[in-house]
Image 1 (cartoon, rainbow, N blue to C red):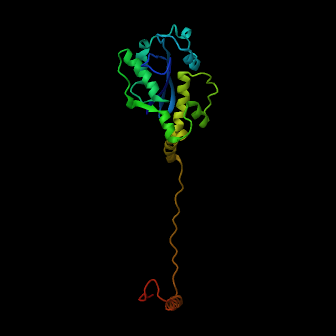
Image 2: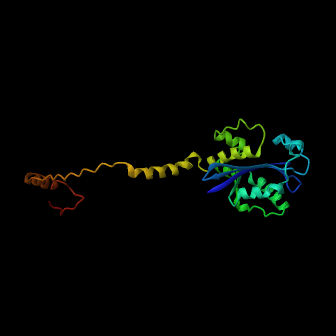
Image 3: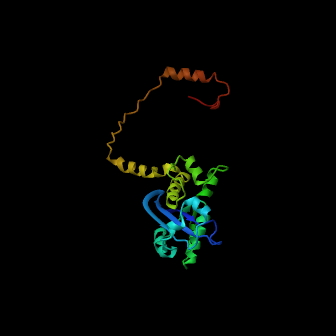
Length: 229
């Protein structure tokens, strides 16, 4: 199964209030394994970057000044994500900005049925715990020491590892191992089973008499009083 894990960086919290997407990072997974294929782009937001947003991701007006507008790269983005499910952390936020940009340039929004929200998954699996990306990385022992600022592709790469843990961890690949073992089995020599004839132990007449005498001493036998040898 092909899935796309993605993250966005923005100028703020609300596309409806005029905020824009300035970065998107996507990576491809097949059967919960990263393939190495990614899509990463920065966009000029056509507005100034608020200082509080810049402190989160470090993307300044000067850095974004020569970056393309979203419509210039929309075809490449849509080709990459295709019709695959889209995995994001607090996915309604990222979907809101992705679909806002798509609608703004006259494209069809991504169906919400394709959304996979890892925050919702984490809440079900770890109720009452912290569900931030940093907290989940700590829980699962995922190294994030190189994450000094938020970055869309970096966060998508960390999220892909978290997603694997939320959906079963490293055991996902065991099916592949079992298939290899099954294919290899016919090449192994199997020793022929040795069949021995059954040994028959007869009962002597003396033993029959002694057994019959013993049965007569049993009171209310389970097998009934009419049982006979």
